[in-house]
Length: 219
Length: 220
Image 1 (cartoon, helix red, strand yellow):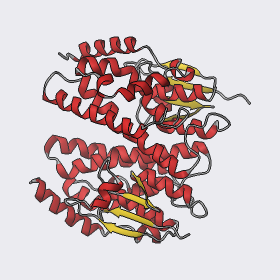
Image 2: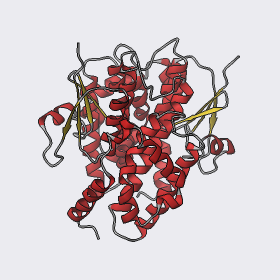
Image 3: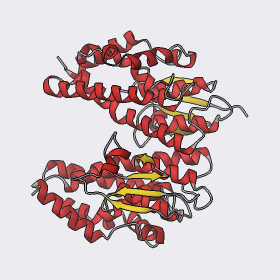
Image 4: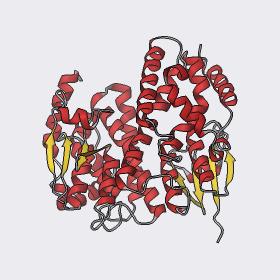
């Protein structure tokens, strides 16, 4: 029986990008449905009634919401190739820890870089650079967070790279200067086909951020 | 080789309680260390340098921080008895979703009930808290536990907050039994289980602790 896989998504969402990369890594054919977040589809509201948010993965009619939960699901179901999580339980716990760190720090703090001004923005700048440096430290000399291959933490983190032009411009930071190893890692990731074909262009994301800032009235 | 298991914890923490229950369910002997959060031990700072928070599970010298990650680790390593997560992938995704929901909603919204002064924010918190409990009640349905016939991952994620209910009800001015009777009966069912009852502090002790915290924070 052929699998039916649908992804309800929104093109600039880093969370949606995670699922796109995981599906591509596993070579899974799926139907991509772009949502209009100001006019959510009945399917989205039916598939994620609790949070009413994208992304939602739908596998043979059954929904899985929350991007990291969906990526783990994909890894467990399509376990014949490209493992995303390590096989050892301790390594798995550490991968989950760092993906959770990305969730707690990068999105929220990054958001403050392009939505806030003054002291709040300065604090966000400091916190963002600290988070990037800590991740750089965790990466160490490894090629990827997953070791020799793309892994769970890489998949969790690389989507935010598409937002860096926005973070840097509006947050007035230079990530490459602060954390060259981090940028080198990101550039390594986007050379991987499953990543590059899943991520939108940085300039497109930047234009999108410019639009939202206008709408929410940030300067 | 005998396992060395240590739990760095703080007795009223619902997050710490989750790990206590999981360890008890699996029959794992461990050393419990209560931290003074105003004077964190060198061990805690060494074992969780990133967040510097409890709880931290330390297994043969290796730390696992974040309560739900630690519970999953315990379930995977001690996989010979009392499975906490379902064996099928979709069931697991579903359990993770609802534990994540408890993480996102119960603690944060609960804060609005006891950590704010009376007013609009607290009223909004009340409304939201009841909505959250009703949704969890709906998810429980007719099952004895969120895990089905036995205690599972979501039960473990959620039951520790029951020890905070007296505080939520008193300071938030709500009656959980009246609004969500099924949640109360689920909770009472859980605390009859030995691994749960011996892992949770007394509701009155937690209440007194919160009264102290409110004084320290200058609330009301």
